[in-house]
Image 1 (tube, rainbow, N blue to C red):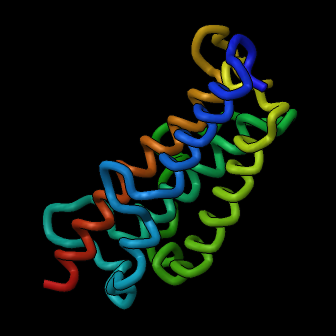
Image 2: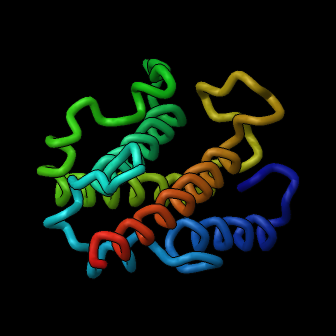
Length: 164
């Protein structure tokens, strides 16, 4: 249970964060975007854009995994920003679309398991955290939700442009 919260408040907070990670809130979900995504064109970079949809999906999956590693791995190694967070092989990212989707979903399930565990004190600093006031479990879950929402919006727009 989250220190300082009643059991009811703790459960409510977890439910809100879970909904933010899994349901349409002020945005659509990744699954909704992927339902009719033109995957045959996912590796195509449109004029004026520095990335393709497959690169955005790769980045989304990789970043979520990096946060999962950060909060649970004793031997976590920080990834160099920004180059470590984008695919080095854009063509490979395009070929691996289904694998990226599956890995994203698997890692989201792992995050949700941690979120749902009452032993996870949402206000405590994660094991690898260095900032007592900032790198809490709650912050990391919200960071995943915020980052995902941002890139889901990009993928939604790319889907429309690629079908045009």
